[in-house]
Image (cartoon, rainbow, N blue to C red; front, side):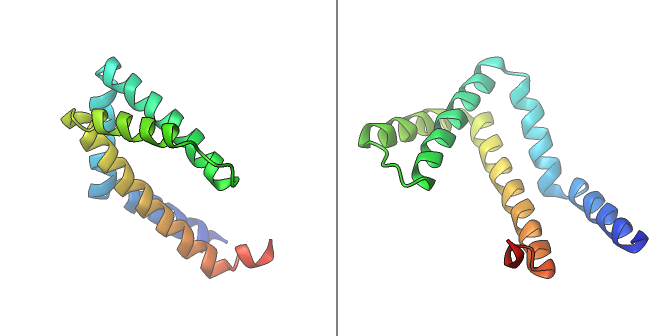
Length: 113
């Protein structure tokens, strides 16, 4: 068990020391320093999450909902700091998700549900 915990700590350290994570943290700190941009990102994420939840539940989203999300995104990425944060966050979360997939496959976790 100690070997597993040591390996988990090493993985955590590797993730925290990666350029992907450092770029994400740096961009996040920059966003937090700008309350207006931070609010806009939060608003966009909240609406995008609601949109995606409906989609995952097979509840149709209206064309207006889709257009509104696209419009919010288009306006948001005009701000370079917001665009950078969204890109860095996406890259970090993609990496994190891949790590979790590897662990799930190695332990066959999903096969036991």
